[in-house]
Image (tube, rainbow over all chains, first blue to last red):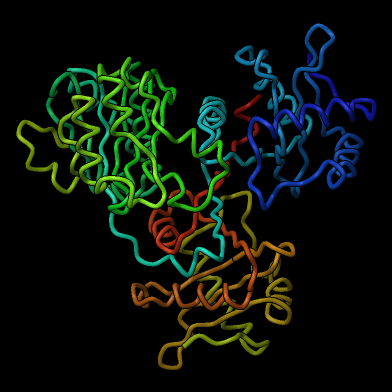
Length: 329
Length: 141
C-alpha cells in the first residue's frame, strides 16, 4: 500500500534513506548529513511529497518528490528494500508521485553506473536527457589529449542474423551518431560486434553489451582497451552484469578500497560462462596501479581474450571492415 | 583571446547564448527565453565568472560559471561558434574559467545525445556521473 507520509514517519524515512545511501552512495561532493536535510524532508512531508510503501504493517520503501516550476516534477529519492523488490512497489511509488505532483513531466537523476536503476526507469519509459559531468580540479593538470580507445562486444551464439538484427534495433537508440557497425561470423561459439561510436565512448560499448545480452538472453562480453592504457571488460548474462574487470582501477582517479576490489575479475564467474580455466584468468586478470606491475596493456588484452577463447578482440571498428565473412550493419 | 565580460557585453552574450540555444535546444520542459535568464547573466558578469573569446576583434565564444558551494563550481554555459571550432577555443575558455572559479570540483551537464561534447569533456578529464531521465507524466498514468 502506498500512502502519504506524516511527520510520524520521519524516523522511518531517516532509516530508509540510510539504507539507500549504504547501497548506492551518493557522489562525495553531494553527500549530506541527515541534520542538513531534515528540514527539507519535513517540508516535503508538509507538501505531501513524501510517500511510504507499507507491506503487512512494515515500511518497505519510500520516495521524496517536489515540483520544479510549473511543468516539471522531480523525483529526488526512491528506495525499496531489497527483499521487497520485483513486486511493482517501485513502479507504484513512481506513479503515485507523478499523480500527486500533477506536472507535465517527471524527471530524476541516476548514477551512470547504476545499471539496475537505469533498467528500471527504462522499463517505465523514461528517456535519457542530460549527463552530469564532474571534474576534480586536481586532475585537470594531468588531463590532456588521451590516446584513442577501442573495444568489441562478443555474443555467445552462432546466430549471426539474430545479432545483426539486435544491433540494428539498438543503434538508433544510441546517443550520438555511429559511423557504422560490423558483425563478425561465429568463431569458437562467439559472434563479435564492432561499432565506431562505441570505440570512442566506452560507456556505450558496455550498454551495447548489456542490450545484446538482454535481447538475446545470451552471455555477452564487452572488452576494451581504453586510452591504450586500461584493459576493461564487462560480462553480462541475460542482461545483468555479472563481472567487471579494470586493469588499473584508479586510472580515472582514487577509489574507496571496496570499489577497487569490486573491479577485479571474478575467475569463477568467467570460467562458468566462457569455459576458461579459472586459474588462468586469475593469473592474467590482475589489477594494478601504477601500471608498471602489469604486462603491456595490449598483451594483457590478448591474453585475456585467448583464455576466454575469444577471437578478434585486439582491434576495434577501424580494423573490422576487412574481416572475412563479416556483415556491415 | 580570452577576456572577462563586462556589463557592456550583455548584447554580445545574448547573441552567443541565442546561437547556443538554437544549436543545442534544452529539452522542452527546461526551455527558457532570454528575459528569464538576463538577470542571472547580469549577476554572473558582476559577481561570478563570465568570459568571452575573441578572434580578430569578433566575439566567437563565451563561458558562464558560478560557485554552487564552498567546494563545487558549475559551468552553466560554454559555446564556440561552429566556424571557430577545432582550434582550442572552448578548451581555452574552460581552462580559464576553471582557474578563475578555483574550486576543488567542477560540474556541468551536456545533452546525452551530444557525443561531440561528451568526447570533448572526457578528453579534459571529466567523468560522467549521473544521467538525467525524463518522462511525460501521461506515459505513467
